Length: 392
Image (cartoon, rainbow, N blue to C red; front, side, top):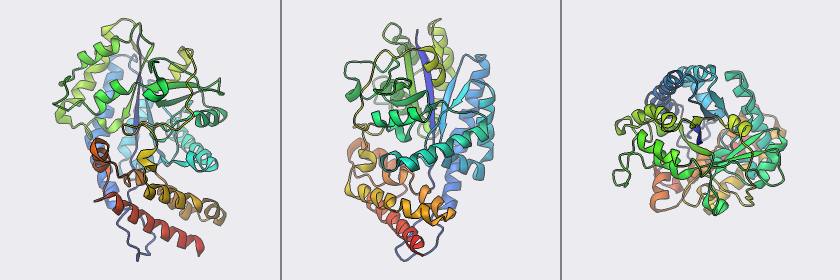
């Protein structure tokens, strides 16, 4: 039996406007660009993909199930610029076949710097999901699947039953990501690991005509999933929701692929099924313990923190950002705190990455800046103004 656990990450940051060292305007975010990009991605991805998934759930009479993690900042922008997307997610929730996961509200790196801020953002996010969709998340996934033993222990004490992480080779060794595990010193928490090879076949390689498996069909992929039978219980497919229509354009056939995939997986073996993360942890028992003393993530080939902390610019920007947290909260200025939290979103530090080759190309694809150095200078100019407001 192969139980497929399908999870999509949904996130868009508040992108900063070009901000010079002489600028004193307290409006840091490019509202025009943010609105334009969100509406564009809504038309290309969120709306057609949502309808496609609704149709699949209805067609398979509830046998097709999946999960989403939506950052608080993307939900804010949906409410402001594209409320119809919220309605689509509410329709998906109403089917009873869709689960919403918990994460940091601002898609931040808070756990690395401040457990207090981390807890606050997670509680903010949990409350928003309850308000919008009537669900109380049982499973947690940290920003960009950043994970280690300490995070697992902390999240377990926050009351979560499960947590998601990358099935990185350096933590698995000879073991498979296709089983349920547990972290050390958190016996009640269950750990779901991403099958990155099969996930990345869809998310990254689908439209690559130089890939030896191109073109990827739903039937072929279902056969790969079916090969897990006898070699594991799970197939955890974790990826960005923007895979559909944005990263992989509609012209590549990605929607047709996803439209047919549930049916192909369900019919390729009578024992195959789709489960949400909560159903996975309710159905299976861990087969062993996975020890992750150092931070891992799902980003770049290293699958570590180097996408956000790989150079001196990134380290400096994050250090200066979090250095003012206590004073900022003591000041009690709600708008100032909101601005500070919005610039804590991990994307701003991702843009500062100076990697080369394929990883560098991915960073360039997502960045609105000419170079990582432009990103750093722009960010620090904004942070400097926030520090000035703090001193006032």
